[in-house]
Length: 244
Ligand SMILES: C[S@@+](CC[C@H](N)C(=O)[O-])C[C@H]1O[C@@H](n2cnc3c(N)ncnc32)[C@H](O)[C@@H]1O
Image (cartoon, rainbow, N blue to C red; front, top):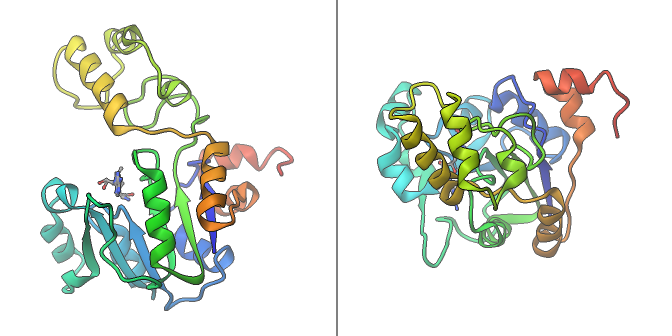
């Protein structure tokens, strides 16, 4: 089994197109493969992977799954009538709602930089993968520049897990905020600090590699592939330089 990690966050074309290619090119699996979108949110990627011929399923924490998004509306919008394709993750003990050895591939987009329990997650992903399966994770790197991509405060991913309160106040005072974020600059600074401490978890590539090797026995971060295959600005710049 193998874990493949992209921390370039340089993907610009749809996640589904990119992942459909990566499942074949990196994972060696064909259309029809059984794929789990881990941390699926409202299920948009599951729906798009189904449209592209994969046997796709999704799961997410059940608070998010049931309360966070309008799941029903989303599925109706995608004309998907099989709710059995979505499953709620049990939090304690942490367990994905699928039997051992179910999937050829597990993917995630923008999940691992939030997840506080990566070891439990990798262990569970390993359990639900078939022998020879792989997991592919797309997330912003701890070294992503210039702004933390969720709340736009500079260098927060570098600083995680330690950042002084004045850093949040400084940027909120200077007007840095998520479009539409309500409240005074003090409210925004407080909320951002809370989000940083409870909603983000930026591991170094080395720490991810170490955990992945321990759980899966393998790891790769094929940046050259992501540089070639993605259409984002960062990869366009990267293609101008010789890259490993
Ligand atoms: C930014 S959203 C991304 C949702 C979706 N993958 C997408 O790309 O639109 C992050 C998702 O990660 C999920 N998440 C965070 N921590 C998690 C954990 N420990 N286990 C499973 N899912 C988690 C959240 O519930 C949320 O749906």
